[in-house]
Image (cartoon, rainbow, N blue to C red; front, top):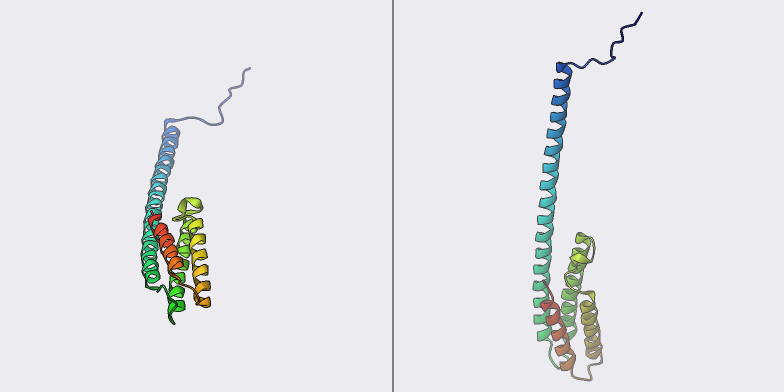
Length: 159
């Protein structure tokens, strides 16, 4: 009196073939997804380097303009000296903003184009030159030369 026990799931060639085909389809979909994500990641890295290059070129152009404008400042105070100094300050502020934008886009200090210490030095030079222009009692030649030197160092530090 033995009872015949039948398995709940019967394994047939048809079931194995269906499972294998389903597994192959899942693997193909995962492989395609990995390829698409790799392409997107590669494209993103390429875009990031292109953005960094453009920001660096714009900073270089702004620094060249700031150096040129600082060179136009005379050694004696004239009526347009404040306006010229304001244009130099605008270029420096623009470069500072581009540097901050680069840091934001890269997600940290790896995106920093120029050290913030260089901007601090240039802003200090601008403030001292502005004070000399407002007092208009002494020559601004030394302060202007110092400003030009620091702007040139900032430009040389660009990648």
